[in-house]
Length: 245
Image (cartoon, rainbow, N blue to C red; front, side):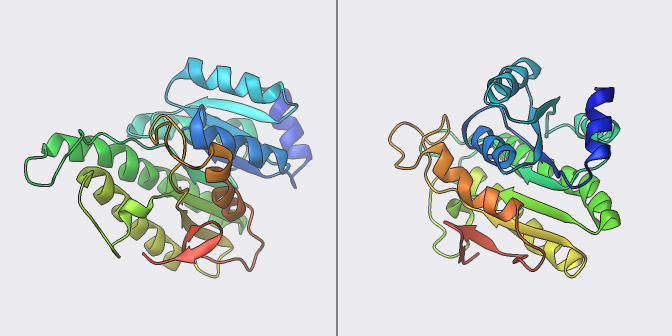
């Protein structure tokens, strides 16, 4: 790891990206596409074994992939992971908050849903990103550069809010509010903060009937993670186009 850190410091132009939930699905594809774009990617996974296996596959493609165990629902894990990444790479330039869960049982409605399901969902889908942006944003502000992408969902849009999966919807709506608030706080300081909707994607969460591939679902997030200095901030995007909150 010492050699890895020296290489990063010798090449300060190579951005360091942290992708949570990077061991499978959309997160895996985001990791791949960012590395293909020339970034060093820290692939974060709740399961250390799954993270190592995913990183090894991507390294087999000649990509620059590091791996980090990270349970976003644990403040202790978040702090330890950020410290480890800073020791190895010296900075975090890009943060993609991709890790997420859908814990609502089939047919769930607000009335009758267990508060425990809301707490579990918010722990991963909202508080995890909150802890990470609180850790990474000061580093980005000090460096004068940062890109934060929060993976949201059309199910979290207030416009057209519907029934079903209430805990998931609430968590993504809260994530959208966090995105807009943080973007306002960092505007004009070199840090761009946006939310991405990947669409309905064929993953373990999305299911086999979803029309979009994981690579297609990753595209907007990768675009937002590599925006130029005058790129947008404080927006919600699908297919690289601005959509309503």
